[in-house]
Image 1: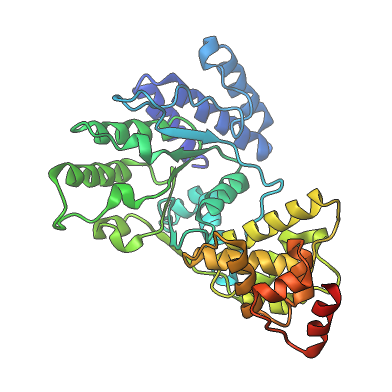
Image 2 (image 1 turned 180 degrees about the vertical axis):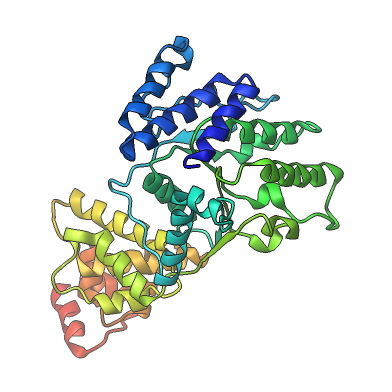
Amino acid sequence: MEFMSEVLKILEGALKANGSLAANYGGLLADKLASTGEVHQARLIREQLARAPKALAFAQDASRGVSLGQVPLDGDSRLNTVDVSLPSLDGLSLFLPSAIQVRVEEFLQSIRHHDELAKAGAALPARLFVYGAPGTGKTMMARWIAASLNLPLLTVRCDTLVSSLLGQTSRNLRRVFDYAQQAPSILFLDEFDALAAARGNERDVGELQRVVIALLQNMDALPDNTILIAASNHEQLLDRAVWRRFGFRIPMPLPDKELRLRLWQDMLGSFAPKKLNWNELAALSEGTTGAVIQQVCLDTKRSTILQGDKVVEDAALFRRLGLMMRLAEGVYFSDQDDEIRWLRAWMPERFSLRVLARLYGKSVRQIMTMTGGVTEDGNEEGEANASS
């Protein structure tokens, strides 16, 4: 039977006396029927929903008009344990290596054709685990998937979900998983290792074990078509039993040169200078994350706009990149003189005395004195003397 998953959800809502669950999935069923040409049947469902009490009248567009009701709260702090957002593809770009892009598309297709795959006994639960270094795009992927499926994204707030009270974290988890089943949506567990850390290590306590057990039980109780995405920067810390719950696992590596090139070109856009050496930029940014490239582009474009220009300067862009890479390595220049000396030593052919003087609003002689009189040729030595 087509649309069996929606029918089962409506039945579940009725059996649990959960009107919002039944109404939300009734609206989704009406939308799916209408999309396949069953307009009359869709209208009958919507008319029935419209006759329900006002609080349950969710017959509007099921993908954007669903009502998820009151978000779950932590019993101790009374703070929300879930943030609800409605990501849009407008202005949202996701750049991935080709092999990973294929894997993401497989996940999307498995969701879109879940009923068809289930009939053939080939369906996998809609569970995706994304892992990798910070800044590689894990959260962006969750937002992009939600936008692609036109579904609300329910991001679990681990800072309020994890409670100091004995047993409260497990109860919070139960409320969150129940909440995610009220309507078509995507449950996103960011910083997943905070909940699913391996049991049995020397620092483990009984409460942590109970949290992992509660997490596994809640995941197992989810219907196969309820979408769950988890992300972690520390996949090596996860309990081994957690991995088996995810049919789709996607590592997020640092971008390769081709991907870095695409990122630079897209994020600089019309602000890129015509003679910019893209290959040099992509090569120099080896080892950086997409988040670093994005931050460099944003900072450089912002400075360019504030200066009244429409195109970034090559030297300003490379300066931002160099300093951001050093910051990622844990090196911070509190003194501008140290910053200038480092840039001069890092790329003397690009950061000449004259360029550094322009970037920092100083004279060439000041820059030469600051850098110990190091020049790349005799001409700048003369320029320094002429400027004094």
